[in-house]
Image (cartoon, rainbow, N blue to C red):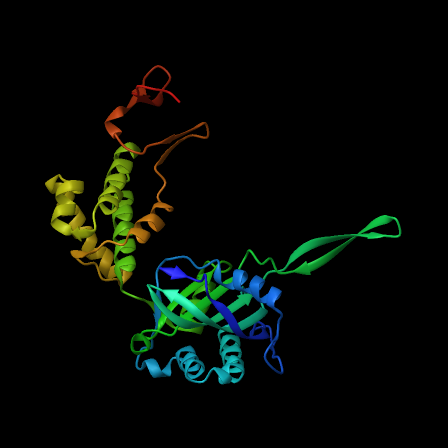
Length: 344
């Protein structure tokens, strides 16, 4: 759970970090950035609103957590908030060293300190590291000598945060608890923010385990039953999600009996599960507490829809026995028969 209702921006520094491969360099401020109360409220919304309950991360390093740069800089700021400006320059330099992919855009880098953030019922400070890479064009209309003048301005949309990271002052021994956002880079270049710059690994909590297992079930159905009727695939995926939705704890035997049911499907699932865990390099447990927010989050990425050419979409939410697939020899086309009691 994240709650920023009483959170307040205490300190802010702004720098500009370019692409190192293009030799764009760094432009650092000479001091902390002072803003009035109204701008603080806008920045609070810009920085904090995009963060929702989701997977959390923690700082990591292949040999020693103390060698993770951002972990060290964050620890110094939490220990001595007056060092934020000095550490912000170190953070900017580290980001520049990581900005080598040609698709990475330069942009403003904001380093902030927030008070009274709530994470899972614990009140703590948080360090925010944000980067804005995209500018939008705005029209400014104002009266002038009896007429109206229209001019364009380039600016940042406060409803669209490009990249963000919140480091909460909790669980320091495990690498702090961290939340991240990256809405700009999606391919190989996206790794620079989470992996190269921040050096994060997922926190193995209930959200993490629940989300992974739902993804496992979805991928299992899509890959193992690729040649079967789409309605049967959707039925198995929906039953899997419903199990997580209706239970507080996951138990592999109960899950297989209620969802997979058939011995041959259970055997196939067990084999796929082992391969999935090895390929994805993630732990897959037979028992764990189910996270309701993770179920809600995962539902957004499951589409219970059958797409028929470019003419129809059939949404299947349950009772797959009410839909039958057939083939018409005369027209040489497939068809579905739907059974229902009422039309609305």
